[in-house]
Amino acid sequence: MKNSITITSILQSMLTPEEVQRVVKLIGYEDKARKFTVYHLLQYWCMAALEQWGSYRSSVDYAALCGLPVVHYSRFSTKAAEVPFSVFKELFHLLVCKCNREARRKLTFPKELLLIDSTTMTVGKTRLPWAPYHGERAGIKLHVALRAENGQPLQVVETLGSKHDGPMSEALAQPDYILVMDRAYGKLERLDHFKTHGQSFVIRLRDNVHLEKPHALRRLTKPDSSVIRDITCQLGTPQCRSTQRHRVVMFRDFEGREIRVVTDLMQVTAEQIAQIYKARWQIEVFFRWIKQHLNIPTLFGTTENAVYGQLFCALIVYVLLNWLFVAAQTSWPQHAVLSFARFSRLFLLQNLPVEWLIQIQRVLLQCTSCFMN
Image 1: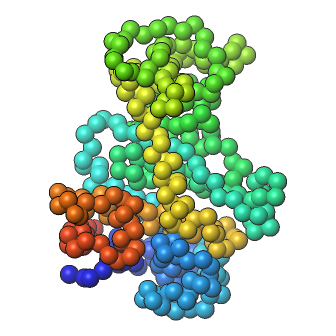
Image 2: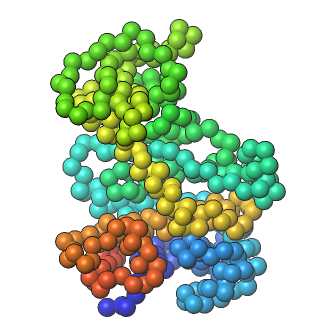
Image 3: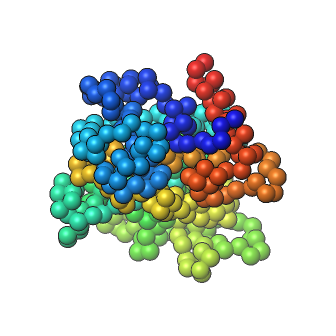
């Protein structure tokens, strides 16, 4: 058994150089380099995210300690600006498909929750002149559809920071899931569209949306329920009103604030709908975690390829760590039980308990055999 398991060794188990080369050809990029290929760039980006390297220059100083090929920092910078970021985006989604394979077999409900939201990274406008945002700031966004069941991203779309969140929900919609979203996505025409096309959703309503012709639904009152009201109604004013009647559930959050959510779900209780919306907090935790632990706020480059390439490789690291944490779960003795945050920290320090190392080796071995077959 190996004494340590690194992100590059896991990456090699999940994405072979041949697979990366196929994606490179599919995108149409010609990789002529021998000493510093796209696969090496992928490894550099992943290590930079996990170990939170500070720049191109400092990265090459750490590379030798990680067993990566040593190149001048200008070569790293040039390659990052040269390789289309769509290569890393395609590799990310390929990896997501692989890591979700086992999870699909474990589904026990006809539909699971898909949490949709976005996060913005901003810098001074002179750093990214192609991405104007607000005033003296430039910014880019990642729009994410996150599976609530296993905490894995299902799909990610990159845009400029000025892009509105609402329309992106239509690009991220998945009829096999229940979409859970915040107020920015609650446009009335979109709600009608989702309901007409069979897309299940639970979306928070803006406070100023008018409820027209409300009709209370019969429900059993539960003790200690946070639900205030459960109705069906049309939404909006005569100037802008939904064509469909929608179910609206009102409840109080843990701070006592009134929350109104709209949904097409009719066969579940109001308390369950409140719990579904509360699950949306998981995507906020996801955004906070990747920003704190994967070096995302520190953008190395200034071109689209360098910026988005770095971000998609950081997401690849998250997918690998999360998949490994979930796949290695078993009946641990008390001293070996870990949270995801502690698992990630010990993984980085190469100080995981021996029980975890043994189980991870088994998972990687099974994974390699499965993908080869």
